[in-house]
Length: 91
Image (cartoon, rainbow, N blue to C red):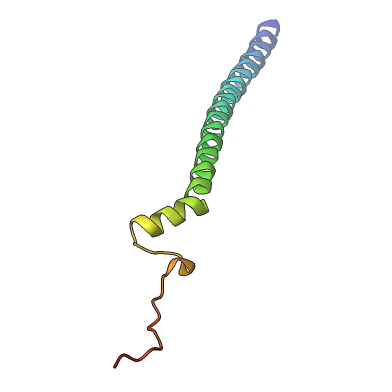
């Protein structure tokens, strides 16, 4: 009788130890995954900050005007010099 009880107790203890190790291993895997996701999130935040900065630079009115003037050869309307013909008639 005593040997049977000992075997049952040992089996239960072994099962509990196995369950504990399985849960602990799974927990460690989840912690590793969380840390990896935190690193990725930091990287994404950094890229997002860089993209916002680039967007601001690209939207700059000075930059847009420079491109319009140099590449597209555009000018402001008030910069046009009109030459009006004289009203005098030549004989």
